[in-house]
Length: 577
Image (cartoon, rainbow, N blue to C red; front, side, top):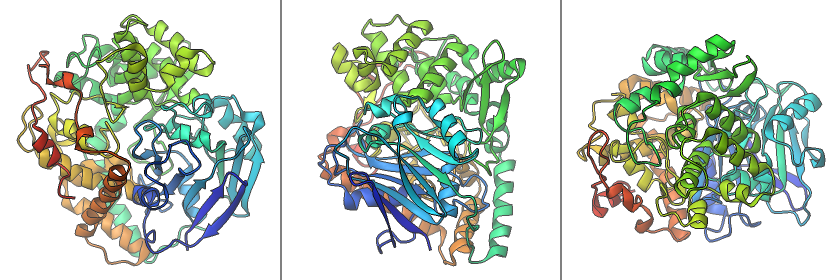
């Protein structure tokens, strides 16, 4: 029976408890959002003792289901002031599931400035002083923890940005190589972890029993079918394994939806130079690795190891969003400069999307010249020091805009927007506006249908159909995030109704339940209801569900389109939940 582990950081004690009725049967995002809704005062300061950090594996995590090793991290966001769930790969989730941990709830706040380290194993829970890791980036922290506790242990940690409680700070997870290339990046949850004076959690599942299955044979049969759906789909089985998520650079650029120079244009002159195809060519030339999983059991393998010109490892998990944010958005055109920025973000513990948007705002304000890669690197390094510019950058795009008097800040609910211009990709624009998470593409990925033609054919340039598309995808995504499955499983699910049934079959075989596909949709609605309810209590209104005014300007390159949804149309996306 899985249990909830509560860590009292004020007393440095812990306790186990059975899940109460409201939490029973939940995992991943469904559980993190439910705990935050029920236990965190919506009006509390995000860095106060009243806020809680919740870490939860999905309900399929720990099983042999392909791509089921994702972890959800939740709390009241230091960046947006609303509820936040951020999702990551890595080793931690599967190990927690095998140890019977339904969730970790980090509570309280110590009076001292000393950081702690927590280790979880089959032998129990231990607190250790973390003074020897203070001030270290995630690379050195994870390397030392593997040396101390054994190669292959799960690690979640914060870097200098989290220690300083900067609003764009992320939480990083050791990948199968012990590198911090996987992150719960969005929403500043690294700052929340830093406020609890928790430097890292180590999870060692050696000696743990396998996850129990109610019907092993039915599970095995469903898992086998599930793996086939993933590997045979052209996106999850071919495009992503070949070029990683960066395959989207050329696709989105061709569609005229690649935001360029702080969302001024939809096409980047040097897109080919930062594309997935170019990235793979360089990796092959330099002896890197073009495909690897972010956690054991990943069949898509869209991650990679990127080396520098001398053949030395530079970064991993080099994603489309990262390359866009630190590249086309800032007009930086050299992939090696972007990779160095990515590595710094992983090491300091910073959300790469937020950093790219913030650097764009700083370029808007004249602090760095447009396209100046070395200048951006120099600026980002200041986050690891006490330089005031590092504090401005590390607190995100909205904060930087205020500090510099810049009004062109592409953010919703103070969270920087991702890599699709909402004027040329209207479905994802509605998700940016209405998601409880703030500007977030993963909350309802309209690109899947509008550009990649999964689950039908939509028109990204017209309003028709995009309200329903955003609503349905937000509901489905909330459910997927609760299973522990990677979001990219949505591609085969959108194209094949049997794939969704297969997920339900695996859940039923795991727990002995009799859920239907309709129950999965209802779960997604419940998750969104919890999140919207929390945000309402925190003071959010419909006025917060709006894109910045400058999106009413025409996106002239290349489609001459604008953001033309009325307030009533925007409000109808999630209005009936």
